[in-house]
Image (cartoon, rainbow, N blue to C red; front, side, top):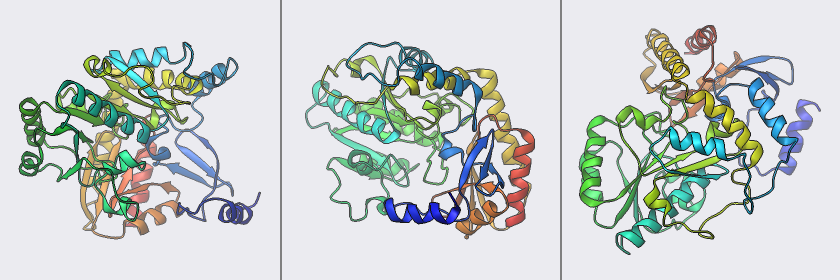
Length: 392
């Protein structure tokens, strides 16, 4: 099918809720590279928005997916089956959690986390302890619970009213946090590295205040690790950089190796309040996605591999800092989650880089995210930075 036919059919049959570039239609990928319909190759530093942790056509993933698909693709959560057991075991053993719940996406994981937190607090603390605090410029999803926790007006506009029981606070403001917390606070939901917010990381002072308030008021801490977790920052989970043990952790993005899979990790005391019928999902824990997850988790829990991610991230940052352009305001992030904030023109820079064969994605108003596969090569990092430098 030609480029014009593909675009015409997309315009005719699909909901027009995405702004797709008309000069790039990918048809195949290998490693860190995508090839478009005209045979042009692009260095992929979007990675499916941090989904393709090992790039395209990663052989171990393909083998696991094919192997499980020959057994069965779906049978539902009505029955025991073994495909989800190994990834659940790895997630529990490598985190501070005791139980895992599988769903299909990051939004679903955050929806479940909100429900689990409120159920626990209402039953074990107080019936008034239902409020969830989240942070401005954060992003937790687009369904109503997750959207109500997403403190950005541009995502909520004309979809209101939002659900009650959500309070918004300025990120990294200890004064604002102290003012927001009360005996009615059930949970604080936060990204330790804000994904859509431009790569802002939590400060040590802010985390210390949060933990002090947690001890005083007894609320739960929900760590949204959907974009920053699973090796992306050079640790298995981003909150490990802070020495924090959340009560609930949400995961998705790379977990299913490109197939839809999300997870909620939770402590036993919270899990004890969730009984059969309280929450569920038809497709969550899909056996093919779980087979892929086992491959992903075996890699992103390997300390040697994580050190390589961290080292490559330091290289990427050092090369970006060496550009010395007055157009660069700041370079933020950790590991291979790096955001470059520009004074202006971020969308134009992204378009210009795509034309030169580098795919990146915006974060916030003027930040450009660099999200290469975790197994990206040094030469690919150098090439990406050279292209970025050339368009400034």
